[in-house]
Amino acid sequence: MGDIDELPDYPEGEDNAPLMLLALDGGGVRGASELVILEELMHRIRFKIWTNQKKQNPRLKFSQVPEPKPCDYFDLCTSTGGIIAILLARLRLPVSVCLEIYGKLSQDIFPPASYLSSILNYKGLVHSRFDHRILTRAIQDTLSSCDLVDSQDRRPDAPLLTEKSGPERRCHAFVTATPYNAAQRNQPRLFRTYQARSNVQMNGASPMIWEAARATSAAPTFFDPITIKLGEAEETFVDGGFGCNNPVFQVLQEAQNQFPGRQIGCLVSIGTGMPAVREVRDSENVNIFQRMAFSLTQAADQITVYERIATTCEVAHQEMSKRALSDPDLEGRYYRFNVQQGTQYMSLERWDMLGELRVYTQAYIESQVIGGTTVNSQLQKLAGILYAHRRLRAGEVIR
Image (cartoon, rainbow, N blue to C red; front, side, top):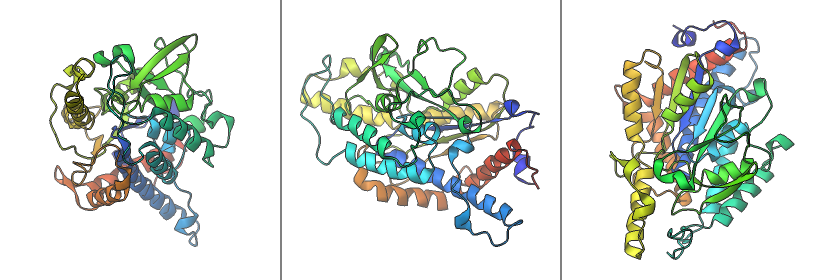
């Protein structure tokens, strides 16, 4: 059986093709682990391209094959802490460049020993631990200096929503930010790179690329909220991962809303590593704002609670796994990758541990066994599905 056998029935016409979905958990600098996994997935696709093209050009070297980009293989992408989704899908960057940008941003945003004094400032909240002005400047400067951001449509001050269509805009993306006045109700707002069927929430407006990246990073206790002008109105946002740090259900729901009737080719969920506390059963009822302390001791306790909630995404994964077993449209098409060992006590801002994070992730890829199968074999299978999907869309014959 070849890669094509892993795809669902492929209807005539690209608009009816099965959807390839990608959901990336939030987790601060630990998001680099997701990029390492995507890097390995793209490498395996690149190897398949090279092997196939060598049949016509035996002298072709592997290094001559351009690095595949996730935006050419996935139809819809999202990430909590949406910087990664914006880099991959809106700016259409290869994973290697995203890793460089992510590492630089992490260093700039989280300088050593920058735990600020705990004082009350924004509507009674404890002062954020990191300077939001540094975050804003780092996002703007890094995106502006990126060599691959070579058009006005991809500048940091361009609208996140783009009117471009065709192959260049095949991969849609959305990121989430939570309106400050709705944070306790866990009702995130979707900032999309594409025109939605219904856009009541946004009233036709779109934030700039850098504003969307900044809003999705405004995790309470880490960074102050951001106020964005959308049309004639201004609105204040905090991090979209508030109570929803694994967006796997959100990406599936959005796919069903925006592409009704389309089959799911694969649903790929990637985490930032197993947390130290593995069960949070009632996170949506944790009222962070009310319980945020007016004493330093209580404030420190709430920071710990938030970090644990924000990095505990396994509950959503377990629920999706159960659904995939009972839903014929998802059975055998849901993939979850999440480093099991080494990241449990790595906090969200430890950019100085990025090298160790890569080692942990590579060890996970090489040797981890989950549910009777290896991560290595799951990545290989997924690479084959994505490669076959891309070739079918291009009208190639799979042999």
